[in-house]
Length: 263
Image (cartoon, rainbow, N blue to C red; front, side, top):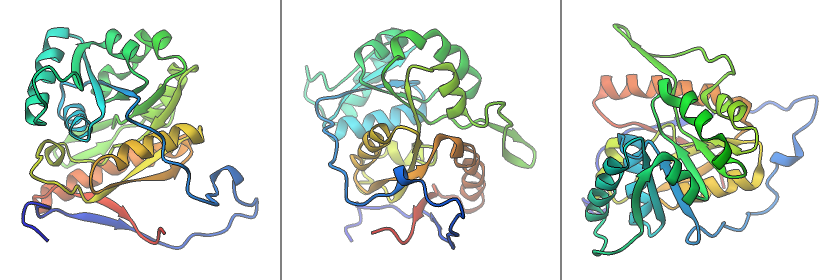
């Protein structure tokens, strides 16, 4: 493998025995044939929190993959500056509008799919303020409600069960999904890592929306989007981030996850 394809990293592989439920399977979750890959090049991806590490990293990777991205921030000037820096990093020609920046409201208005990558303490207020323009749009919540103490990171208790479920409660007219919780911002920001070796768990109750978000994951070379269940299962996915941070600190790496046994 060429030396610039992958840097040393850790992948936590999840496996185990699946037990049949007496109630029978959820027929909507059964994949009988591969779904057609949604067309991404016609979409605009909005990134709320696009000036933070996770949002910037994902915006960079999507822009580098040829997708159109708009960064949102409370400060439009800061968003525009970040967009310019990312465009230069991605090697986009001057005048290329593949990545741009504006305030949060403008970002949502221009976007077809919106990633929420803001700090947990800003999550509710931001989504409440944008409820109307987010109506009918796919919302991808990647927020991890975590606390940090002397003994390391730990998941916070969220009244609705998870940040994603909280988003769904605040945005009843939006198509809320959860994804991109376990992707290292450091890895995303380093384009010399041409193959990002991990899976992204995508959760949601809208099949078309989760398929779209899986395709967004697949757009990043090396990443595979994997359906991870209904939105009610998002809590444990968000909480797992605390374990990955502990792994990273102990082993000085940027760990991700892989799901085994898939076709």
